[in-house]
Length: 368
Ligand code: OSB
Ligand code: MG
Image (cartoon, rainbow, N blue to C red; front, side, top):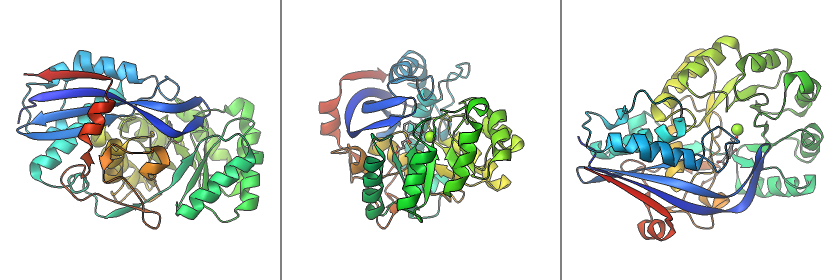
C-alpha cells in the first residue's frame, strides 16, 4: 500500500462557550485536519494541539510546521504493509501531537482497507461507552452549580470540574453540599506544588472525589507519588504521561491510581494501546480524555474508549456541548449517558466536506 496523497487543512471552529483551565482559556480552536489517500480510500485525523503552549509545548503552529516540513513530505509516496505503522522520520524527537495526527489517520486507513470499524481494529468489544463532561473554570460558584445541574439532567455519568488555587477546596465543598451523590472529580492542570499546597490538596479528601487529575507539575512523577502516599483521593495522571515509558515509570513509582489517555498526547493509538495494556496488567483503570475535538478526533477517542480497560467515563461529550454545528455526520450524541460507537468502516462518521472546505483557511497538498 502506498500513500498517494496527503492534505493538511486548518479549520477554525468557534466553541459555543469559553473553556478555561488553570493555565488559560480557549474560545476557538484552529483545528488541523489531515486526510491521507491510498488506493482510492480517504482516511481522516485531527491534530489536538491548542493555540498556546499552555497544556504542552506543542501548538497548532508547531504541529503545522512539523507536519508540513518533515512528516508529510516523508510519508507521501512511501510504501507500507500496514497503515497502523506509518513509522516515518524516526529521528524526529518529541512532537507527539503532530506525530499522532499521521498515526491516527493511518489507523483509519487500515480499518477502511479491511472494511472494519476502528473499534474492531483496535480490539474494542462494546457498542457504547460511558460519558462524562469537563466543566471549565466558572465566574462564580452559582454559575458552576447551574452548569452541573444542566449536565446532570443531560445524563452525564461523571462531572469533571476544573480547579486552580483560590477556586478549589471551598468551591468543591459548595458543590458537594448541593450534590451529595454526583460522581465528581477535579482537574488542576498542574496548578499546584507539593511544597506550597500540600494542605489544600489533602483537604480535597473531604469531598469524596472520584479522583484529582494532574495536580502537580506536568513532568514530575516523583512528586505525584509522594502526594498519592499522603492523600486518599486517587490521583489521575494526564500531562505527565507522554509515552508508554512514562506510564511504566508512573506505575513503578505509584504516582497515582489511574491514567487519562489522550491519543494525541502520547503519539497516537498504538501507544495508547500500549499504555492501556500496561495499566490493565497493573490493575489501574484508564479513561479517555479529550482536547475539545471536532467530530473527527472524537470518533477516534470513542473507538479507543471501547477497550476493556477503559472502565471510567471519558471526556467524550456530545458534539453540541462544544459546537453549534459539528463537521461530521452524524454528530455525536449520547443516549442515557452512553455514547454509541459508530460501526461503519474506520472512524464511521462522514466528514461534511463542503462545510470543511468553506471553513478552511490554510491548506497544503502533498502528492507523489
Ligand atoms: O486537561 O483534560 C484536560 C481541554 C483542553 C486541554 C486540557 C484538558 C481539556 C479538557 C476538555 O478537560 C475535555 C473535553 O474535550 O471535553
Ligand atoms: Mg486534564
